Image 1 (cartoon, rainbow, N blue to C red):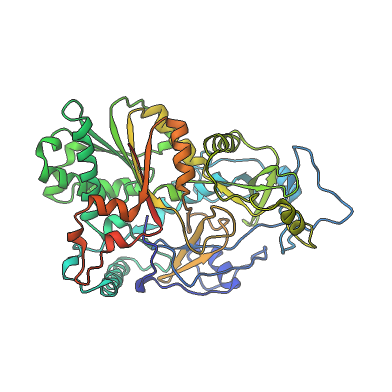
Image 2: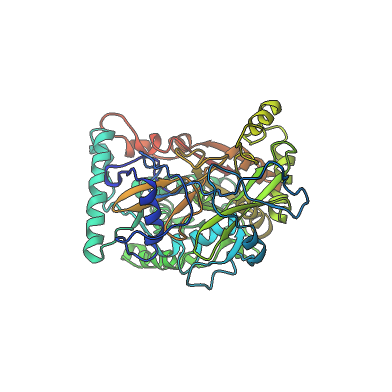
Length: 521
């Protein structure tokens, strides 16, 4: 949901492994002065460039014990493997057998982070990001508001825009520090906020044009937005329609689906903040629930906005046996000390198994990156080397995204999806379709190398393979789609003269080169 550029206001900091380990422990207690005991050994790589203005980070915490040469791993479907790495921690196989399996849904009522449990990777990620009591989006996020919209026509060039943006970041956080000083404040921005109101106006222009082409005057203009942040996109869209097309505005209804109670309250506050925004109140409904809990059938034609939300959908982690090519699904064990360990099982749960089946069927004619691509002989040779991993690099599969498409197909049969997200992210953790994991400490971004981090203090964001996503969306919904770059979409639907600087550079079109847009046609 934020820029892929590193800004002066949020520089990135190199930190050694002990510093990262201290950060993991003390973020939860806000005690930053005493180094705690941390059982697991891990190598931490910290980025020199901020991936996007959300901040978060981690270290690859795949843990294992070396196998004795004379012992072979179990090959039954019940066996659980610890992935072998360069680390030699204590064997946790007995705990894995003993500890109960929990889900993110079961942890929603918990106010403390769990210990002595195991869960599938998507449950761990979802609990880390969305738990109502300690989740990242529930408690620890502040969305940057630059104040007055930038007057791009008066800005000399892009370096000056970056300087102004960094200055406003500093001013914004200084004001927050006057109210409450926090070393671990998670602050990030979205394109909606940076390019207000032009970003929202472009999306409104696209929807109104398509609405008038095929639905007006027989149907209302019904808009759903998933994960609305500050509510700025909603207000910019409604302002534009009210000003430019009162007849369409009279038929407009806007509904937000927001999982975070904090953000839902913030959206309601901004809706009622001014006389102009209060004028939209009868058009807007804010629904505070997860889209994955949606159970209301909506037969009406509607546009469904999902702008920079797919990157925070939970993913399953899959590794493959390099010789048999069998898929193994990853689980996370949290021990009595709160340390994390990865385990892999041959039995896939129904959701992960379904995703692999759907992808195989939907993407037959599409080449996509995968751990088993490439010469088989080379892979076999590599994994027979001394101390080689016993499984491939991980592949992160977007099982939650598949479930979202199923929700659209089941409950919103006449929807038109409009979505934008990152198709690539720099400095991701090792693996295929792997996430960037980052946090923010003392106004600096820290990136690390694993999603297994202190729950609630790290942003975990994934790139979206738009080719695979498009094929799976079409297979599950039966709808046709079009994919384009972020720049192509906004060059077509924005009034680019509004965001052109004196140098001729255009930040709305030129930024977010690592983002794409998909629309239902």
